[in-house]
Amino acid sequence: MPYQSLTLHVFSGTGNSLRAAHWAAERANASGLPACVRPVEEGPPHSSPTGPEQLVGLLLPTHGFTAPWAMTRHALRLPRGHGAHAFVCATRAGVKLGPLFVPGMEGTAGYLLALVLWAKGYRVRGVTGLDMPSNWTALHSAQKPESVAAIIERAKPVADRFFSTIIGGGRRFRGFGCLLLGLALAPLSAAYLLAGRFLLAKLFFANRRCNGCGLCAQRCPIGAVRMWRGRPYWRFSCESCMRCMGFCPHRAVEVGQAWGAVLWMLGSASFSAWLFGRFAPGVPLLETIDSAPLRAVLDYACMLLTFLVGYLGFWSLARIPAFNALFTWTTLTRLYRRYREPGTKPSSLHGRPAARPPAERPE
Ligand SMILES: Cc1cc2nc3c(=O)[nH]c(=O)nc-3n(C[C@H](O)[C@H](O)[C@H](O)COP(=O)(O)O)c2cc1C
Ligand code: SF4
Ligand code: SF4
Image 1: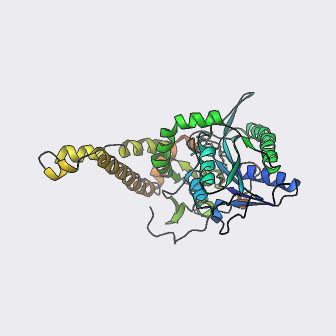
Image 2 (image 1 turned 120 degrees about the vertical axis):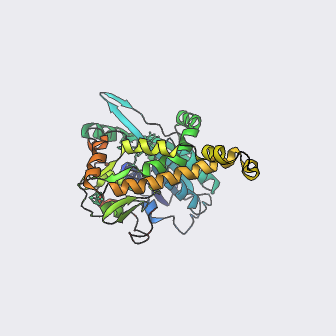
Image 3 (image 1 turned 90 degrees about the vertical axis):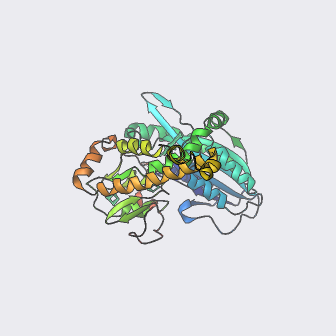
């Protein structure tokens, strides 16, 4: 046994990556290697690994063909590796269509984190994608329980092979095809990280079944839900991990799809074109500073401001029963099955304690 300890850092919305982490821990324990599963909610450890006898794993979902920002940030904050060995496992959206298993696409998720680990002094021993059931229930209904079970059953031996190789001291690098596709789709991933996830964060609302219990706020891994005037309010920091949607005991979390189209149209209007077109001609100062980078920064700031102000309006209206009914009626998520990894209990998802009182300054 080449290792003395295994630490598994996990970011998981609906339990898939957590399940994979437990599979890794089981493999390690079966080989006499003590393993500890550490949700990113706990923050990075304070002490550095001491050398190559320590093994570190990162397990995460794929978001937008790359790693979610929460996990990338966590990896950047890890202490230096001092030659400790490491691996990355990015779970992704496996889908079962009749007898056919369609793989997901992790894109740059695994190798981006491998690069961060390498830059921090870890020796990366393996990278893989792992097909688990798709959890993106803002876009589609969760698959039937039988399909979910079949995908997980199929993933287990794949994961076991990967973890056994790494824990046994070997190397295993998979997913080069996905990496190439991910690089080709890098502009999409960048758009997702810079704009898409902020838009998605501002589409959540609670339908009339919400009783204000606050569990969504307690369980959010990012602390992105605030209870505000007795209702959940979604902040920009939301990663769209789908935990609040999948685990709400009253099935009250919806994603306003029609509202999303409106917000996107409003947010993508070019403020700079209007500003400079209307005021710059004949004003030397404005004519001098007018440039493509400045216009891009202005438009980006205005887009985020539009998302924020628009959401404050949407959220306030959603408190009024008639508007709440309208928003619920104009989204398909009211019909969608929710997703959570079947073996994951709500109690195993810790969430992050709210950093400040609920009624203060939402964002
Ligand atoms: C916002 C969002 C974006 C996603 N993007 C991708 C993707 O680009 N490629 C993919 O294969 N799966 C994608 N998925 C599916 C998840 O990566 C997959 O279901 C994962 O196993 C969820 O793991 P978790 O339960 O640990 O969060 C996405 C899911 C969400 C919610
Ligand atoms: S959305 Fe669900 S979990 Fe959140 S407060 Fe309402 S009922 Fe509770
Ligand atoms: S608010 Fe919901 S979807 Fe967003 S990060 Fe928290 S639990 Fe995940």
